[in-house]
Length: 302
Ligand code: TA6
Image 1 (tube, rainbow, N blue to C red):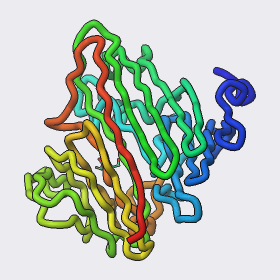
Image 2 (image 1 turned 45 degrees about the vertical axis):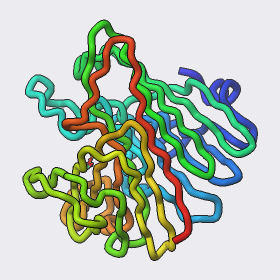
Image 3 (image 1 turned 90 degrees about the vertical axis):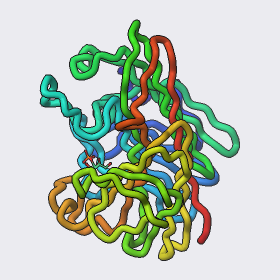
């Protein structure tokens, strides 16, 4: 693996992109543009921070998150791949929740900058270890564009001889001043699986408001979601491409207490609105083909 000096010599961009040591000694890319700043860890290709200049961060990060090579980072944008949730495979009892991509070391494939934006491309290939949990011979390419918006594009290429089926998610944790005062538009009328009610199928009536533990998989929806945060006086938009499901999650009180890497009192400060292909929207990819899913996050005054 390249040293930090070698990485910066090859990929660093003066005043725009620097690769250094972040929390837990993990390698972190710090990106600065006129409109925004961002932090990205090579561990899991994990975007942990994105803030428009002069504004509170748009992404939530738990103050209790682990920063360890064998643990997922709690907050920001975890990448879920090649499955979402538990693997539910008796042959693979140790399979990590949400797949292995967020636990693996990604590599820097390229960097570039214009006056307004910085682009960072990270890559991940199948390994002998990953194939023990999922047989796909894949290459994942994650293109992160930092500017007045945060653009995240996950491209999965099937380099194997057989078709593969996978699930994927950009499991984005958004910051809100108080989730009890926020609401989410964009899902009205959508059908969802309610994971806190035995996966019962329900229909969303109007805006989504968080009044307790919330864990919903909205199906057949390609809509952008708008998180209204009246306290921060801003609307945060999660627009997406090639994603047919959206997950909304807040652990609320009991679940927050049950997570060691999440503060007991942090649940009001966040809501996950996730860009997903899972469940009936799992992706089947023929040999040699590439599937791309994208989320574009932006904010505007309310
Ligand atoms: O996307 C919501 C969810 O599937 C919840 O059920 C909860 O498990 C959350 O993801 C966090 O999962 P994690 O493995 O990151 O603790």
